[in-house]
Length: 374
Ligand code: AOF
Ligand code: ZN
Image 1: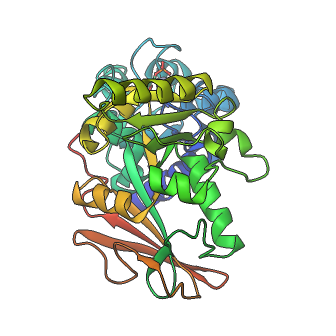
Image 2 (image 1 turned 180 degrees about the horizontal axis):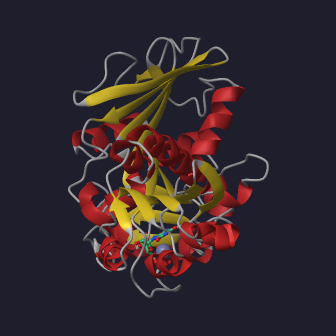
């Protein structure tokens, strides 16, 4: 009989394993599964790219006959529904496992406890809630969309040593070094979508793709808050819209006919460039996020600028902050960051601090970000 410490050790491994495909299984969560017998790991599985097969199926296939009388550790309750694949709970029962240890129960209404019920009805021992806080953190994006009907929002800010995010009218200003930049690209690869304001889109002309070798295909959907449809057709975003989707969030057109006609012409031009124009008042963030969730976007990375960051903070819609502080000052004409290291908005707790070259990286988490009611 495995003790609590052993359960936690194997569950930690299952959760860690799940992170491998984070952001690459949409709209399915990335789940980790480890099959253990007599304290020995027989097989491991993580939800496959694209979301299927599920983690349990992969681990069971690898374990083969060895799964009989074994314990399966899964970061999420095994599914009970006949979706695109038969239920994992059924597969665990058929394989003859003796015990299933679960971190987080699945809020998907097709599952919601029924996976556990199926296992129990088949005489399998089930334990839940093992390393639940860690499990929820790994599944935060999935849980946020399932439970709160919005994506999990990460706000990323790169701030100079004097607390500035950029220089007025100067275009892109390099605040951090190459190591931090690679880290940001890795975060982009984990995110379903990335969002900037039109000010940043125009001033910086960013591409917002992931350019890490091997992860280029993991570029997120790019979203611009662009009330008046001012996204330039000659910019990198519009020019690359056929390769990586761009969604332009426009407001309502002005009421006068002439203005309407200009708005419609800009919309048609963006449309022809392959940019999708979505009409939703960019100031109504909760509504906007709900719309993104209904398109299957579970994780959103907000990358600038200062006023967009501030409006997400004001709306209480930031779950996690990635703050990079560079070594050099920006000085004159600097645009102030909404916050700087150690002077964070209330309700956030620092979880990690690291150095990337000369840059400081800090991760802050909203105190209740991983605890939506299940
Ligand atoms: C598991 N193991 O690895 C994952 C699960 O569209 P389907 O049929 O693939 O079902 C999607 C649902 O399956 C998803 O909403 C969630 O409830 C569950 N994901 N379940 O047993 C896994 N990724
Ligand atoms: Zn499943």
